[in-house]
Length: 329
Image (cartoon, rainbow, N blue to C red; front, side, top):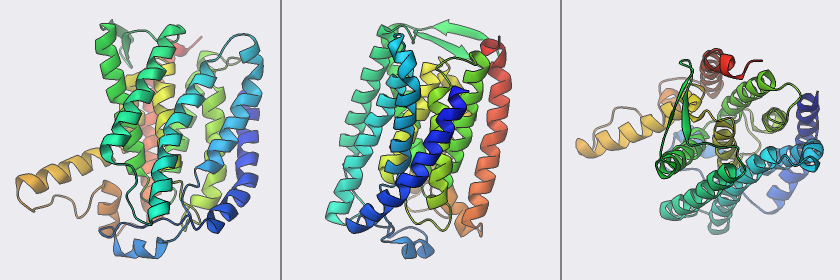
């Protein structure tokens, strides 16, 4: 019941606050600068307000804090740690977006600056979670119901690498109207389902349910044709949320199936760049990441979002079947 209420409150708040956030972004002339090397038809999106992720961040944060208050009074703070971690990445994205808007270009923080900030946030989160007893230096293998232990420092390196990779993969997926929001909405549904299977009356399902509500409302503004983009503010927040949930539920390897789209997008970019350099100018894809290749192959934005979300839903179902014995009653 708490998770359902969190979903509804987050949805309502995001939907209502979105109108005011959008107006303020327009007043600030916080328009997105479109990449010059992107699909030519994306040029018409130039000037669309960005940093719209503030909408669902606010809706999610209020719902999580409000419905999580009884748990915090009882000394349980895991949902708050997840929220704060995601907010940390959202803050990094906000600084990046602000730099882009301020200088009217499609570049904000340098890659080195973002990496260092993301690594710092990851290490702080992992250390706190371990100190509070929510995280162990073991790796659970979904579907096989086995776990193996790692030295803590080896685990810390592995976990930080996974988190930073996940966050930036989600960020890379945000290149088509509604894509990152819809795919991540499905992933949040997975985490909520696992949490409710694990403990129907527990706090574990609070954050993913609230996040799902916020994203559902955000799609009223972000679905094609989008009137606002989430920006790095939103996409880094989403990446932080996905990674934090995987580690808070002690199953980081589940990111492989549920994050199949994120991984495909990232690998297409890595392959494209690597092949381009190795062959001195040749390309495998018409354009990277993968969603742009499909657009140039004739896919509409609606089709990209539909297929990628459907694929994510199938993989999330498989992942749920693989972990339900561990988290079942």
